[in-house]
Amino acid sequence: MIIDCHGHYTSEPSALIEYRKQQVASLDAPSRTPSPLRISDDEIRERLEPAQLKFQRERGTDITVFSPRASAMGHHVGDVATSLAWTQICNDMIHRVVTLYPKNFIGACQLPQSPGTPPGNCIPELERCVNELGFVACNLNPDPSGGYWREPPLSDQWWYPLYEKMVELAVPAMVHVTATCNPAFHTTGSHYINADTAAFVQFLTSDLFKDFPTLKFIIPHGGGAVPYHWGRYRGLAQDLKRPPLKELLLNNVYFDTCVYHQAGIDLLTKVIPADNILFASEMVGAVKGIDPETGHYFDDTRRYVDRAPGLSAEDKLKIFEGNALKVYPRLGKQISSQSITARA
Ligand SMILES: [Zn+2]
Image (cartoon, rainbow, N blue to C red; front, side, top):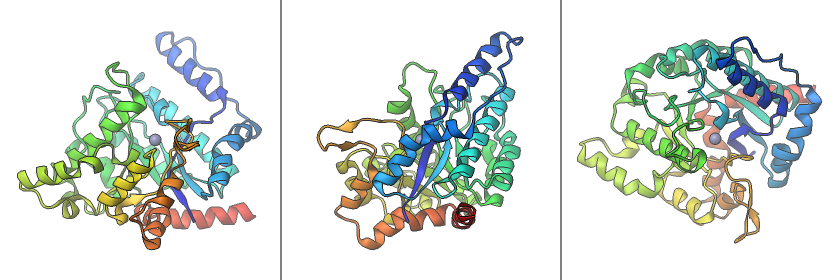
């Protein structure tokens, strides 16, 4: 089985995007409340079939951990009520997708974060998604300000109530920012990669995992700049009198394979132990085109993992399946229960 741990609902019906536009417009004109959202199952199917489902079939991957479009989370837009209303709608849409295609998708939720609001406010929505909708993970935005980094680092006790709930529910978080409103950054080109790298260093310089030995994070986009600069981080840990990185972080921090060229995956798989790498593609997402040098889609990451020279068959089994089942403790059971639903 090939589990893709990083997919977003980027083929959402246009009515959802229109609803969000109206919601944002209503912030300045409260009398203009958005019209009720109406989307049929057929509209969901029509958009998903030629996108994520087609690519799953063509690339031979089996199931995707699927969450709302990350760049549209927009935690910095409006206030906490805006974020909660939008988050619930987005998570409900993921649940509809999973219900229509239980063999292809497993839910992961957006959280109703909002600048300056303590993350404990996300607990009721996390509980709803896990306990009622069968989701197995959440996306946690380390920068709800949208590119200005005004919140405490992920290692700060400010985040602890949410972590306590994640541990209790046995759900990991993918560290994932949303679109940036800081024009210095490009959302997917720099803001995402910066955040991945920043989160790793926040973990490196803290004792977070002493406080939460079973808390787990997936750092997406191949871990940002981290694998490439592994020597820098090992050296920093040494200078700061921290334990070696393996001991300090590698029971809690994992990297995905959303790296869009062979040399990048070769480096990732050479530097990071196979036990800490999870297969992912983020299709259809950040980079949609075909690489003229290879003739294949940039985000067809299965090809790169298949061809990575240093990986044994056992390593590939871990990366494609085994590690995801470990890092997402609810995943195995959820896959079994959804395949029963699919057969019924
Ligand atoms: Zn993503």
